[in-house]
Amino acid sequence: MLSKKEKIILKHLRNNARKSISQIAKEEKVPFLELVEAFINVDSRIIKKYTTLLDFEKIGYPIRSIFILNGDKEVLNGFLTTHPNINNVSRLSDNGFYAEAAFRSMKEYYEFNSVLDKLNLKRKVSHPIIKEIKREEFQI
Image (cartoon, rainbow, N blue to C red):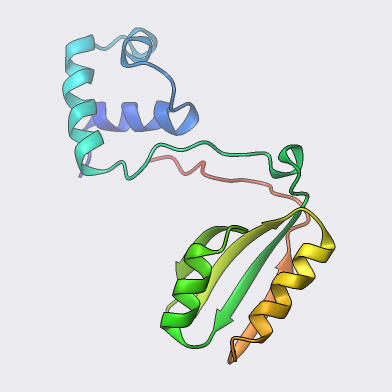
């Protein structure tokens, strides 16, 4: 269970991970040292990684797709976790994989699909992403 101060910190960091604890303390009117203590606890227990959300189109990757894949777990896990076009990978309850990929062109997308076809998959479903509506905005 999270304390009230831990929730305050997470709320602010989810919106802007670069926000300082002193800035959060001022905005929330909470003593700085109390938030530092809560931050240390949250940082060591809950936060997995600090990262940056990218606008893929602006960095030259306008083609994005979601893949639902079933096949040899070890082969798929190795392929998906090391492939440079894969942004996210999750295991699914049916022993399948959910993967999000970004590509510079349709040619690159089709080449990726060709490689997948050589992995003897039981299932391959691809859903191009038309528009991202909400990402990493879960609030506690």
